Image (cartoon, rainbow, N blue to C red; front, side):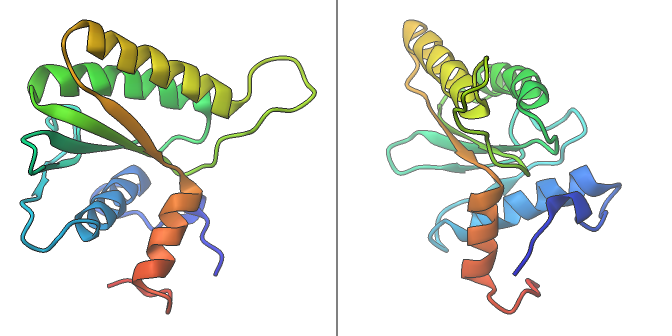
Length: 160
């Protein structure tokens, strides 16, 4: 099955909104059916996360979707979202970033790969949170993970 997120069908305003909804639907399916799950409306009113679930250990897991296709735009946008999420959600302990591309790996070319740039950003943000007394784990759901989840939940290709 070939899934190209550039071709996602626009819903509720556009492709970015459709991608956001897809990520939230996949997030909800990751949880036990009895686990509380909250979907927030975006457009500046989501508090830094598209959806969240409160964990048994009293932490909060939040998902943020970014419909961008390069590491520079991703890190710029998600940096602001994480600042907001940490301010609005005082128990946020896990922050999962969904995006529609896969990170590049190291090559013989000069400069850092997408993976290296992301890891440097992640380490800095987790370290900064610890300095403020916050426990924070940042994780990613890039295109490969999203495709795998889609196929796991609906091998027929027509997720309803």
